Length: 432
Image (cartoon, rainbow, N blue to C red; front, side, top):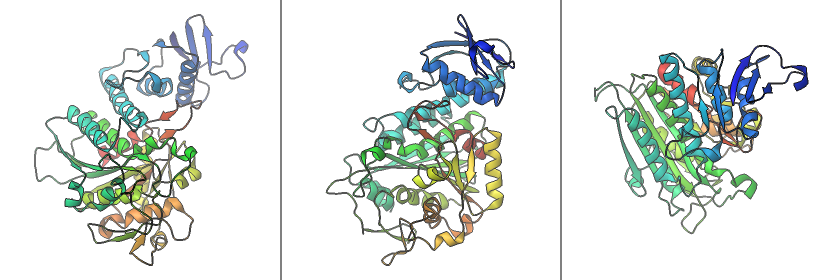
């Protein structure tokens, strides 16, 4: 089907303010308001109609328009594991070289994020998630990327107790990917940014077990690890010339005779002790290890990303990702980056008072808030305890990826992972 763009309203026969009209084998998208959303919504409609092959024609197709169409036309049932960016049959128009390169880069990064997040937990588990992320980034910059994976008890040898504790209840060993992208060629080059991602490849809730309705989509609880990997992949393709380190904190949170329990005390590598009051608040336990490792390099910026709390989704829904930081200046830069990349991001509160709301009578802190409120903010406060004070006030930000996954299809998005956040992270890396 040929796809055209028009600034005129659809003929009356198609209904008032119809977003798309048809003439034989041609569909016309009518751009009356919010053009990119209109394109993405029309693409969803075409996919829902079963249109399996499209070709963009006529004027108006630039990089943003093409990518908006790709986002909506995505179909997880048709995505190919061997080449995630090859799923639906789309014939893009001829674009200038730079515009085509940017479109290809966006699709490659976002398609990998959508694919790896949508894969079942039997296919993507801690080790395979680390391996897939490393393979993606090594393939983009083989001379600049080095990596290693700590697996199972190797984590304990490095005192990464959070990842090991959460993952020890599964037959699938917990893992941490430590990846160094260093295009400078200087082994002593400073680290501009460290990225930390939550990679819970399946979350049963542990002994604080989730009901089925809350567990069915928990293959997606590694969305933070996918997102920071995809963001780095996009930035590399855009020519990133700064050193970046990546830490993926990966585990399955399962119930077994070896699983961690409520009341357990974790003693972290930085000396902070944590009482487990809820085994379903496990993401922050694994991220703590990644933040400790990231901070040791004293990077210019630490960014952690996670599908961390239901509280963030309650606050902003699934259209926005959530941002938390102690720095107004940094918040402004991150929100500007999201705006420049046409992604939705909303700042939620994080203040010193939240650091006092995660107390425990048996350890330095607990892994859930003591007051039962401000769940997204107290989760971020927990993470802050693993970033040194000299860095947390101005060089650390937390992204709660409330808008990264869609349990069911909408007018704009297919069911599953959206890749929403990849471009913001890539822009942050370039601007750092």
